[in-house]
Amino acid sequence: MMRALIPRALSRRDLPRSYRSFSQLAHQREGSSQESSDVVPKMPPFDYAPPPYNGPSAAEILQKRKDYLSPSMFYFYKNPLNVVDGKMQYLFDENGRRYLDAFAGIATVCCGHCHPDVVKAIVNQANRLQHSTVVYLNHAIADFAEALASKLPGDLKVVFFTNSGTEANELAMMMARLYTGSHDIISLRNAYHGNAAATMGTTAQSCWKFNVIQSGVQHAMNPDPYRGVFGSDGVKYARDVQETIDFGTSGRVGAFMSEAIQGVGGIVELAPGYLPAVYDIVRKAGGLCIADEVQAGFARTGSHFWGFESHGVVPDIVTMAKGIGNGIPIGAVVTTPEIAKVLTYRSYFNTFGGNPLCTAGGLAVLQVLEREKLQQNAHVVGSYLKERLTSLMEKYELIGDVRGKGLMLGVELVTDRKLKTPAKAETLHIMDQMKEMGVLVGKGGFYGNVFRITPPLCFTKDDADFLVDVMDYTMSKM
Image (cartoon, rainbow, N blue to C red):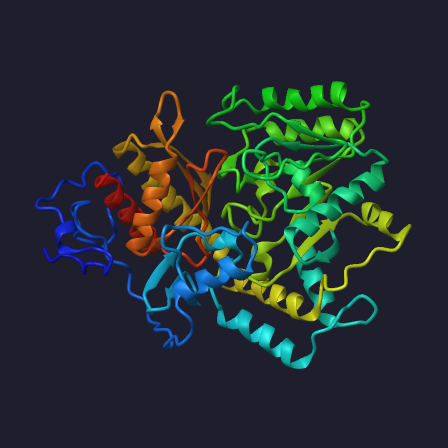
């Protein structure tokens, strides 16, 4: 059996002397004769070569960042990657080396880097007009709003465009407060809703985010099936929301805000039964229910177009961003006509929210998702990838949990499965080694020990195999 080509980052001394059986894995690589995790995984072929890069080197860019950009900016890896080109599910560095991007979905890309249809729509609009749509008419914003509203259930059909998910969540909170007359907002511990003052107040990630205190914001117990005190019993977690309303507010509440699957928090799926119970509690207290779909929405979970749909609930307000523009800055809030009316009592506008360039791109993304059946692909490939990752968990005690849906998956690493001790150093080491072998994953979670796997929705089973094989190979060397 021939060995796969050795990546540049590895030497022949890194290759093992003997093979070990791959039989512990329940799923073998389709169409492959690979028998052992000792064989260096080979990246799937891809018919694209980027043009030569003549720009500054990674070292030069890093120095400029240190000299001229905010010291709060951070980057992954000991040797940060200088990304200069992208095509579908792959990125390329300054030397033309290809990397499988398994983190692009949360980083904003939904249907693939530089998808030709999306690029064409943006370029055509840029050649024609880029302006504010606050006081002038343009069909791009109306066309995208109509298409977006058609993907939502019930009476959710009024769209407000913003420039980011942070703006969308800020607007949703303001609308809820204006509509209900209550200032109190309830969000979850371990949630993430944005970078502005109000959204940081609801984020409750004080271990690494600024703990910005906001009046009227209460944090409820996180319904985490893996680390939570009630396991997978969502109704028990929901009681904490009732107690928060009874004892932490005036008995009324403006809104409850949550993600369907916590993204930055470590791809945490909410315990079954939680959202239906909480939505009922909040509405009885006069509040609105806000679904933050910035990361879990837009077909990413595969089984449904929106994350909240898998919980069997219909929110009053839905927020979205990131993937809806495939990398361009656009966010949106969708609500009912009745709730939307509160913004007519005063003047509200967003200068560049819904500008022709971004909405033309957003509409193209939605059309690509439907035409290329990317939701179905997210379900099929995501289910396959989760099965392979779960098989890997049976092989390595280091993996404490595999979770998520579709192409929004998390792998939590622990040094002790019983105590669930976070394996933070191991997570960083594996990330670095996987990068050297050509696979990029994200990380998150309260302890920074969860791999966040959120690739573009054009991800294939071959890509999934390569990702898992590289993770397997890396762990086998520890």
